Image (cartoon, rainbow, N blue to C red; front, side):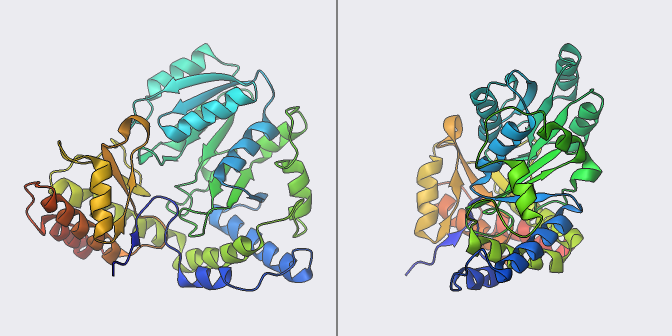
Length: 379
């Protein structure tokens, strides 16, 4: 018998409290019982983001909230700058093109972050920008992008919104949109919020709200105006993901009970343990500015990453692979959400075993020792 341990950057393992909530008998959504739970969950989302403004929930994957960010706050022909540094940066570009925006596609080598001078050059050439679209944590490359600089750039323009995909950063970092200067922030349930896929979440600023009346792009299911009116009263415009919202109420309580400072520090230590262990084993990290949500690492020359992932699965560890041109070259190890320090020692140990079995000259225990040292020195 092999017990499978999930280390993919979405879906992630679920806490027992969430599993229990998901296993309850369904309730009807047009009832005072559900309204009470919905309003509790909404209030906890506001605490997570340190805001009193609307935080909307859609029954969709995170891409649904990305689409809502486009169709509710922009118009055909609006010029937007996309920070395109990975698979999900490409998604911002593709969504913008789908709805007729004038997309400036700033393409960046996967594993790198944007160059501030180049962003300034784009802005000088395009002072009529209506939006800057970026991933905070680019999941495909495990790279973190600095939001504060982009927020300052956005504020320097007449009417430009900073639109942020925080799908693998919210719940890992303290992402406070009003402190940072984010106008639209989206996230999803299956990452650091510790739920199955199926819920997306959208915050919008006072500045963004002024765009709602001006946007003429077609929208129906993803109408922010319709949902805002309903959700402020504890209901949704259409059938909600009932059990996911009930479970989100539980997972948010776990996050708030831990405390956002403690949560951010835990994720920093988990990430440091993983990254430093990989370097101790002689492996190269993918990202030059790595995120604390997941670690991307190249497998050694001659070891196909997808075969290596299968070898890991044989001993009970499932990690993610690379996408597009990185397929077969990297593995991605999650450490966001329901992970603790022993989890990281476990995955490092499994990687050492798989490396040895693939003929790599590995000093067994070297990565584990490094991870242990980081734990001892920080906890």
